[in-house]
Length: 154
Image (tube, rainbow, N blue to C red; front, side):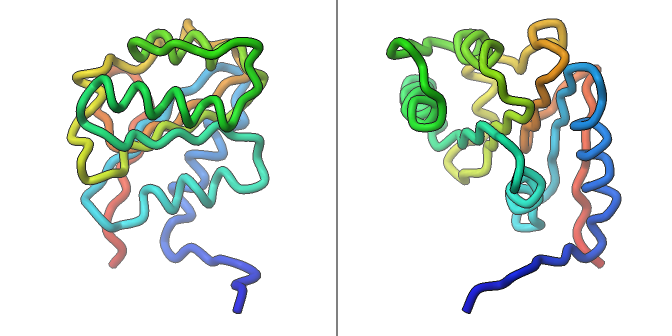
């Protein structure tokens, strides 16, 4: 049986914040965090539906494995005229910058990845993206960025 529609309960505010960032005329970085098993990844997936999206999942805490895996995921989602070599997050951001994709999600959802971004590299500054790019990160702390805390449902 297929579910035809999904209704979020008590997530209207979070969806509104994401929509506002997505609809703005400048590059946006939204960082989403909250305790385990409250729907951060599902919220991102739901928001990305029907939108042209690059959705990358950080699957490893070891730097080299994480970067290799992100490289493999990227190649499956984006047609590139060359095989990318991603040695750090800056390399990834440079590649993503030139894609005509408005929504980029990097999800640090896997239990094996504990603050991978500390080891791999910080998220980009807003100046590194053209105005049409939106990036949503799940579970990362940052400064001077929109941080969306996902509270437990009551």
